Amino acid sequence: KPIVQTLEHHINLIKAAKEKNVLVAMEVHKRWDPFYADARDRARSQFGNFQYMYAYMSQPKHQLETFKAWAGKSSDISYYLNSHHIDFSEWTLEGIARPVRVTGTSSTGVAHSKGMKTCNPRGRQNELGL
Figure 1 (spheres, rainbow, N blue to C red):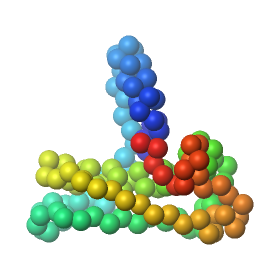
Figure 2: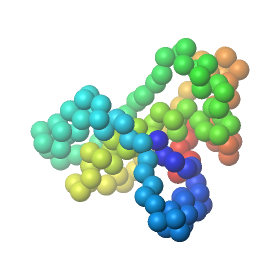
Figure 3: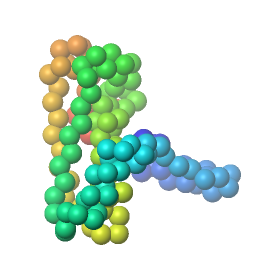
Figure 4: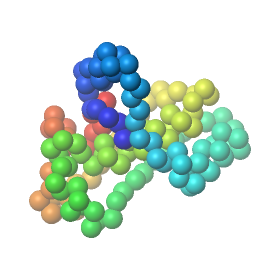
């Protein structure tokens, strides 16, 4: 997952890492998931020019109870889940293409019915903070 959510925090993290002479890395475990690795390999070798990517990710309803403790406070569900697809896109297209437009949609029905806030700390609906 991304380590921080804002450009300011990224800049501060880079500065601190340089001052301490340490390497900073983020967790990208989907790169080692056989399903994602196979999809990347196929996209890079078998499908021709990359024109369009559509990603969808959801979690089982019972996991909302886990999210409830922090969703809408320090992060949001989209940041938690969809960061994997942003990384997948960057990893897959590295050196061959760059996105020219990114759009997103969300829904709130189940989460709201359980009394769960689905906005990030800036009050925006399920968006990535970066």
